Image 1 (cartoon, rainbow, N blue to C red):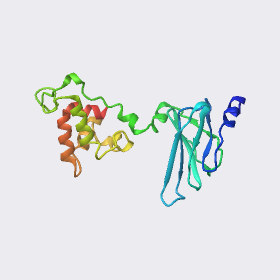
Image 2: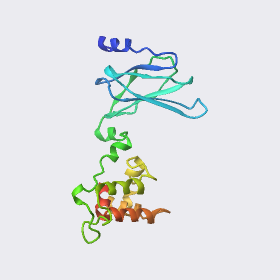
Image 3: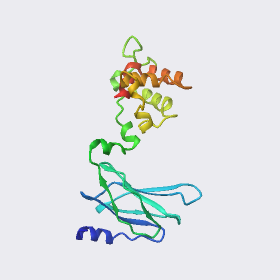
Length: 211
């Protein structure tokens, strides 16, 4: 470890109910990545996470007494192998840089993927219905369209998580567009989902989700 990293580590002082240390990778100190401590050694599963600061330093405070698996997750990284630690320990963690962008993207959080959704622009409202831009004519403003997405989709789904953004049987369809069209018609809520998609402007919304 370089002298600079040693000096950073020297500032991490874990109290008796904390776990702290420094996160580094092949690129040096990792700032702004998550350090997660989790345990099943309590009456219920317990998870606590923090974000590293200057020099890759982290401190996870106020942990109940238990054995914890401590690991690193971050943009551009793959999840690190868990290291066992207990409150009071100072543990330096090794982060692994992802070998490819695809490998890195596998651990991006749901909100990252959700942020890629592109709703209709404000100047496309009010909607002009099936014979116009497809958007329900009752949707007068973009905010109303977004509210339909929140009330019509997100009450049941975490948009952006793997099970929503990926279709495991995609090979059964001619395209991802066809797969999404099938997805929102199926199951007990199929009628409700397809009605929401129609209010969005079906063709436009299917392309948005399938993108």
